[in-house]
Image 1 (cartoon, rainbow, N blue to C red):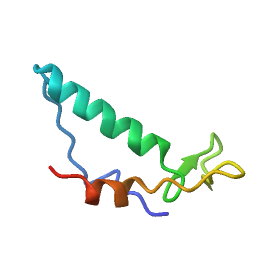
Image 2: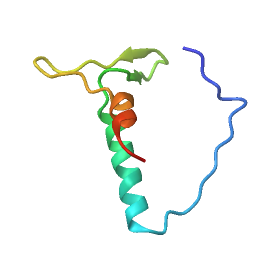
Image 3: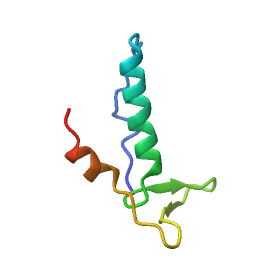
Image 4: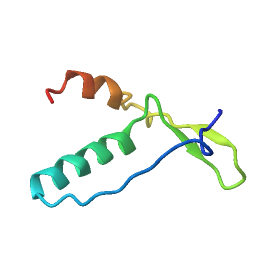
Amino acid sequence: MQRNLDRRIETMFPLREARHREKIRRLFDLQLADTANSWELKPEGSYERLCPSEGEEPLDSQALLLEEPL
């Protein structure tokens, strides 16, 4: 999987309002819970696809976000 680590730009800014912090936390938690599109970087540099536990439905965070109103 090719990564854009040389040409990317990152920015930081404070989230002063609690509702904004809560929204971002929910988004992070949703992304981290994804079992339909996620890969985990292993210590040796390889990637492993994350799968749902047995009997658990896959969680597709991107599909859920498309359904959520902004």
